[in-house]
Length: 162
Length: 384
Image 1 (cartoon, rainbow over the protein chains, first blue to last red):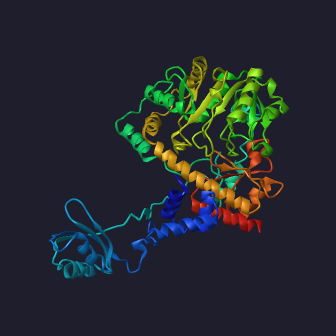
Image 2: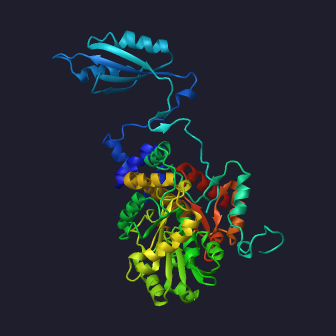
Image 3: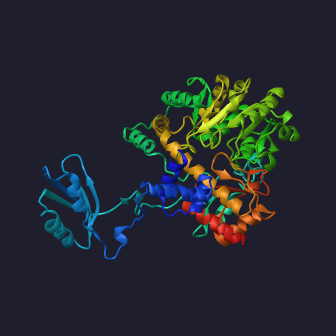
């Protein structure tokens, strides 16, 4: 793995590693790490940094839903046009165009099931290109953005072993 | 027997002291929030596919004994696997599967050592070699290595220790506890010494896959060494399978026969479930090994850099998952105890691993980056 790939790997693991720690792990200096990160950001490879929150530990606990959307296209309207409108809603956490049984997958987050339902029925479904929506509510989150929640038995190895 | 009573331990057993690690273990067990750099095993789980293979073998009821030497399919894969180190062994006659590399080494002591035979031990070393030699009625001969030589075994060290009179030499490279590796050039010197003095070699290569700079070289690949060497390896370290207890010995047929003679009357065969897991590990878990090695290498860099920043001298360990810095206090045992009491950071004093280890500390970096950072921060605070 080259240094750029290693740096990306470590940022994906924990974006809050300090440049000093990154430099130590990669066996390089802090200036090189800072330059590497700046380049990744400038190229848009690293598009942003966010904390990974455990929804079960938030008060109030947000309601999350996975919404499948089917759309119909015409000569004037592309997937990108529809995506542009959907992505503009602040309730939409993620938006992806999918292959398979439906076109768009939306991750939606709101304060209550009612709020999610109103969002889907009043804002998404009425869009003229949307032909169908199917909403799945998230019951439990075990893993998010590569981070596992409540996974731990901790380190049960002996403190000393040969 | 020694002492009183019908169940008093034999003199042989009574003469072997408890492990130097034990008293620390008892103190640490009473404490909360211990961050341990004292462990000698991976912090990763056994690769998923190997675990699934173990479960599948149980569900299919494959729980009977296997051949004494181990399942033929596993021996074939082991023989194929070690070709990466230029080792060429016949799976039928020259491979013995054991309950961990530890069993294989113990078998070698019991099968090859006659009462009074001298076994030279490169030290600091894995804690079981010296007791193993004593249990076999042999005479351990410590061969201290030193920081100036980056804890590599040298001809000078062998000569200084009087190892020319030894019958066998046992060593472990990449090394527990120092993290030292041996270059091919350095191994050639050792090999020449062993040929000159007709010494057999027990080469513990359990950490071979965890070599970070350069390629691992096995002494058995050097001219005239295959016939006088037993190579030990296993699945505990590289494949994070410590609790599955599976290792192996590679040696010429007559030697494997002699090891197997002890094995068949004691262990009978290695754990069957573990053998199924090991086949899967060799077939399909190399990417897991590569990922673990990458993680260890980053942690190694991190710990070495932090020690350097704290002004703690440490040679650049290039293998296994240990660093072996000089103790900041003259008495490493006192330092390790004080660090544990004050900051709940567990490290092992180097003298627990024999001569050559005095004045040093073994620190394992087989822990998460978060724990390593905490441990280093606490160590720095303790030194202030």
